[in-house]
Length: 173
Image (cartoon, rainbow, N blue to C red; front, side):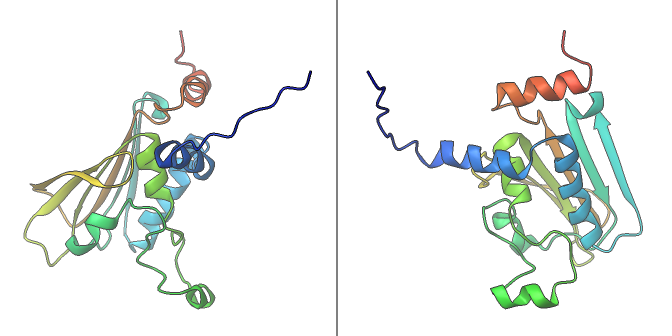
């Protein structure tokens, strides 16, 4: 007898997790996306910190322009970018991170926080995000001009991907 599968609507949360898994498939892809965003800020310096080979945390710090306060609420929402207004803008694009998917994917796949300050800001802002990209918390912080993106517990919602990350870092027991 043939097996007939019944279609089930998986829900927006599960669909987001699956789609996000395709944008950031490994530690290298996560790092690439964050470094491209940092380069777009026109920094003099970019620092990368991996804690336990990236298994515990991945942090990219730049001394670039920072992110304006009015953009923070939408920073990790799907399909949100400050670099494109319409499709035709792709022809004049001079930046790396333009798709509006990387931070959304990282929010869905990890614990994501961003600390930033522009030259116009008296203090910086630390924002942590929920899995759906919405702001979970927002706090004033002392910091220099620039941005630090911190990704902790990468692939935690995906046990197989998480295990692969740990194995590749030779951390799995």
